[in-house]
Image (tube, rainbow, N blue to C red; front, side):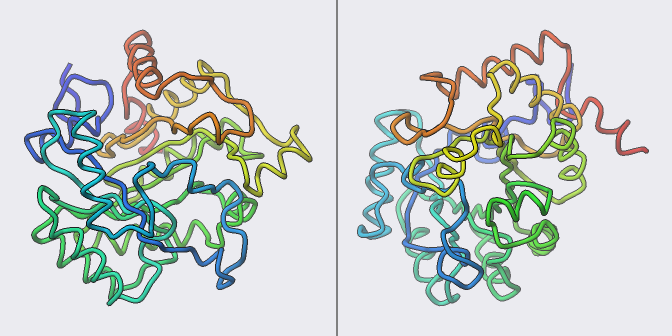
Length: 318
């Protein structure tokens, strides 16, 4: 069967998307440029997001005491040993909110990154409330010659969940940021956490309908994991019954139900997150790697004879 995205996989695959865009394997190199967030520095709150411990997902070579150039060089060397075919690289500004600074400062950082050999673009992780028209115009100009995508941490489509995790912004802010970014011709990414406290299965799945109406290029799904040294760890220790953790097969079924309703034009970059065991404070799936989860989802899609967007047209027509 030929799907909307033009290949035989049963979802709009990020790997295939990059192959068609660049014609070769492209690898991300993470960089920590020393940013913070407005819910950390007292502009919109303190403490940051309740689930956030950046050390839990930052590679070892990422350190804001190093220059951007040094982090990129070390990252490229790291990935070349692991992925020998990698020849082009995207610099992934991942830690905290990477547009939360004056434009002149952003220009210095991003242009330094783009000057490095074999770098073909930038992936910029940020919050929906840390972007403005001036910055968007700058990124639009960069995107004329480089691959540029701005990834927004939406985390949830429900304001009560955003409030519970101390995000400091609303879902309306997310819609506005995605819309403005897309109108400038810039690719957009979105992150959603599956399993936030008090979100039902139906609410989780219904987010696919909501996201399908938004101008999203790529989507990452992350199962809720409780990291050590976070506010959420304290909350979990005090009231563990407020939290729900999916068994892996249960999670796969939920993700597939979500996928069936998701707009087939949205590229699926990730189905679940990984965190080193030494950082995990709550229940988890053990040493299982992301590629195993990925394979299980593909196998289950085949077994159920279903695919991304199978129910999309039907739902959108209501």
